[in-house]
Image 1: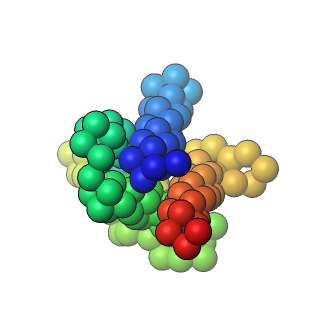
Image 2: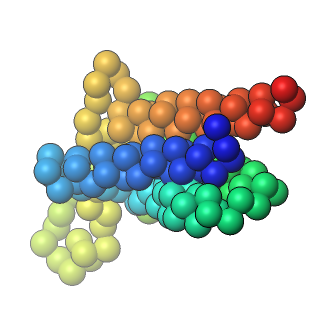
Amino acid sequence: MSDEKIAIGVGTVALLLILGALGFQYLAHFPPCEMCHWQRWPLIAAAVVGIVGGAILSSVRERKAGLLLAAITLVLVAVSGAIGAYQAGVEWGFLPGPAACTGPPVHLSGSLQDLEQPVVRCDVAAWRLFGISLAGYNAVVSFATAFVGATILYRRRTV
């Protein structure tokens, strides 16, 4: 498997994670919190870099550029996973979250100051399956993808 194909594969997983998040947002009506958006940006970048860059480099066949492209894509996916793990820790109360979207429940008073209150809290999981939130699943899938991709890259170099 070429470096470009690894980048395309990892970029495709990133795209699927984004599409899954958008599905939960628009089809299941779970609005994203601030930290959810933080997780999306590296995944979007990984999808573009991996898929588009991999497709372009597949025709050029520049070996070093393919390795760099795959490495950047893997790092971007791992960064999203790290943010997801952090948010899962915030949701379980193990870690402090950002003040903008965590804290005590919001009580609306009917004044204009209500507009400054966060709408979606980062420390409350909107959905869980087997005790794992969407942020937790992002962390698991992202870390697994980064690990498998890095392992394939490493083994290709040592064989």
